[in-house]
Amino acid sequence: MTTTTRVPLRTEKRARSASEGTRRKRRGSVTLTVLTSLMAIYALVPLAWLVINATKTQDGLFTSFGLWFDDGHFALGTNLRDTFTYDHGIYLRWLGNTLFYVVVGAGGATFLAVLAGYGLAKFDFPGKRAVFGIVIGAVAVPPSALAVPTFLMFSRIGLTNTPWAVIIPSLIVPFGLYLMWTFADEAVPVEMLEAARVDGASEMRTFFRISVPLLAPGIVTVLLFSMVATMNNYLLPLIMLKNPDWYPLTVGLNSWNAQATTAGGQAVFNLVIAGSLIMIVLLLAAFLTLQRYWQSGLAAGSVKE
Amino acid sequence: MAVPQLAAPRAVKTTHRRSWAGWQFVGPFMIVFTLVFLAPIAYAIYLSLYRNRLIGGNAFVGLDNYRKVIQDPQFWSAFGRVALFLAVQVPIMLFLALLVALAIDSGRLYGAGFFRITIFLPYAVPAVVAALMWGFMYGARFGLIGNLSDFLHVQLPDPLRPGLILASIGNITTWEYVGYNMLIFYSALRVVPKSLYESAEIDGAGQFRIITAIKLPHIRGALVIATIFSVIGTFQLFNEPSILKDLAPNAITTYFTPNFYAYSLTFSGQEFNYSAAVAVVMAVLTMIVAYVVQLRGSRQR
Image (cartoon, each protein chain N blue to C red):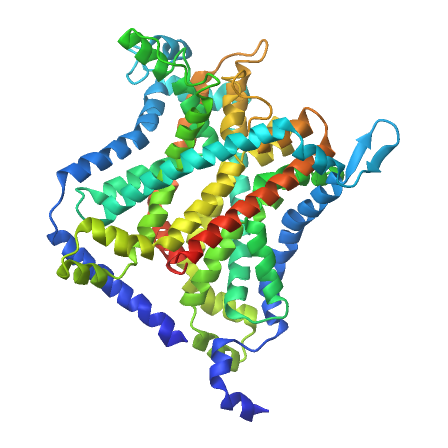
């Protein structure tokens, strides 16, 4: 079993390095590059728009051309400062909330998915088929179709308007379980587990000492995807939280945006834009520094379909 | 005792002894899963069988709420909208993603790594921020469309008007998810054995033939998975219309998408029971479509 799972991995690597060899030899195509550039421009223009407009004042947004800077008014510094100080520094509070939800929610989700994925891949236990069936069936249920019933349930037990109302539902990422399951199946050789058992180690000890290091790339991938899911969360905190002090950034930024349309509200589009920019820069920095991990992890997830 | 175990090492290796040990790993997940997945589903089904009356409180009404959903023109209008979205936006997005993935995988691009990262970038932008950003750009007052209209001295159509709003939302979701799907396809393409291409080239097959005969069949699994995720994502469309509603209050109704409808029913209408029935119907419809996609995908394999 182990030998058959290991060999394809090796040949795969060989095939990859071989193909990189032929790739270098193959001639580049200008037409193809130009066509793909169109897609890259499509991807980048809105981001460029955001960066440019983060340098404008609220008035400048209305009076200057969208894709170029406002002459003479470079307000990036003011905007950034105002974003952090507006309404007694609520932005920083929202940023902190988001980080808290991400660390506890995505961290917990990863922990649960790694444990369960490993359990499903490496153990045979009574009820395994039922677990499999239920989880697969549940993946097709849109999480947001669950949001309203979850809200009604949580309001019954008095959990709404607390951070737990956001954290508990984000602890389950079925896709993370699936990814971890396929990954653990390949990455942990059964012989090593058998050897540890013969030495008398408990299953948990074996898991933390032997399996976790082998699962590391998969764990990082699941963590990253759970983080993105938690950070993107909008509907759930929107319905669960009434108190702005507990808002994550997504709900907070939109409440600033909506402020302009409410009676007597102050329009702060410049702060919405600057606040979005700060959030995106933080996210992109995380993505780019960890790209080696999530790219290999994504590949691992798609190998076994 | 030890003898039969030694006699059958193969069985021990492939499937580890059947015992309860696995539950200490799967158990914690299943407990939370029951609380946040199964309990709300059960609660939604329970709620959907009752109706709150002003006099007499909650009364059991059987399948009345479901009968009402099936005859509800607002629900079907919402469902029709996401179905149209599914039929138009999802194929365009997946086709673009596939083209880019094939281009990057072909090895004939200058700066392939740059393109892979750049086109993926929008995925890292939260949907809410993406909707806010595009909403600003669509806006007639200080958006790009307004600028372009002034610049060209013509009146460009307002992307936020009722007839165009669905297409405008389609553009936002395409922008967000093209790169993500591209990366799924690209990862699947990377593990196609390269020797197949070489033998095909020796046999005189052109690039197009290699794509249709080797690459696409090999990544069918990834195509099916990406389609299923897109189906689920489309049917639960909420963030974009909800955010754009402030900018286009006339174009986006309270029943714009089924999910938005369930939300409005609960939070503006206080119709908890009926909203639960809408959520259940939508979940069932999603599962059916996802199942059909999966069935079709694996049958052709």
